[in-house]
Image (tube, rainbow, N blue to C red; front, top):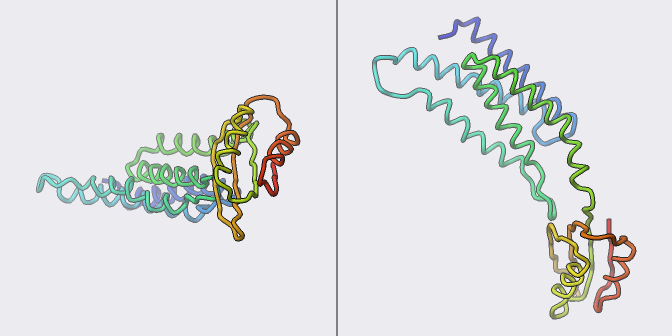
Length: 218
């Protein structure tokens, strides 16, 4: 059972480590920034300290398991993580921030339990991942582009466009269809190129299809 001073030190330390990770999220203008990560980390630390205090009070008196209180943080923090995940068109954003919140809660629990080495190492790894590996997104997105088409809602039109894209060995990563007034459809494709074909060539090929009104590639 930690002393009151040691408990205070753990709470302050959890705020510092949570703040380090939260600063990176705040710097990138994410939904869960500095304050959210600090609060999650400090709250998790407090719950772990409370679990230890309850266990010290009931040890040998009951078979209850006060550690369940800390265990609920892992599942309960999912509500915050779910709030950070947003679907934007064909893309889903916020998964990294949600995972970050979950890991920060673990850092807080580790500090609350007195596992300082693991807490420091985890915070360092998370910070390194967020700051350095984010550059991999640009590498992995190489060859991906978005096609936005406006076309008349004719029978078999979507299938015709789909076959046209597959004919050029383009891998479709995502697709969104939006109905518009005057029997018009807005199609959005996220594709990965499979062979050498310029965007201008692809745009001309798609524009030549029947019932296609406009094509934009970016």
